[in-house]
Length: 203
Image 1 (tube, rainbow, N blue to C red):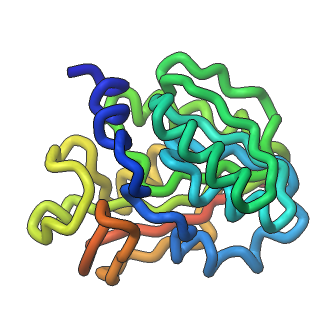
Image 2: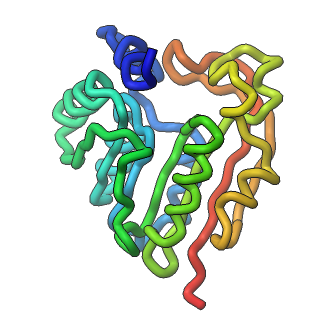
Image 3: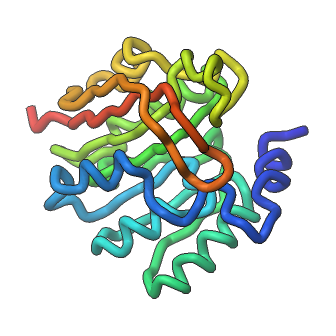
């Protein structure tokens, strides 16, 4: 089964698989995002984080491989009375705009390592000067907890890997914790995560 077919099937339900509320880490770090305008959300799924960011006044573009997920995100945005630019695309094919984004967000973006490295390699050049990348991801220890996330070790993170692959961005926040993640039926329970915020230096 292709990745697109997998996610179309996963999201093909009236229920929002990962809920309609924004990610806790994204909400907590909002005070540090003042002055940012154009936001790109990667692997955004059903749109909960993109819609939240649009509600905060950001100009948001959200990408996902699943047409089904994007259609659910469009409905959620309409219900909330906000505008989001939605794109159905495979990250392997997406052309990252150079210096086009003040903020790039990836929440639980779990990709095969080869594709993940390609995406992370493109992020720094795609940020404007002083722009930020923020994300929360499951660590490799998540396999022992079975509360969400991929079952493939290759698609999970460790802080050292994350810091290495996001270079030359400067990491200003890196938190390695176990916390309770309750996001719909897809993420439920104590989880091993790593949270990051990294900045593109003005230098």
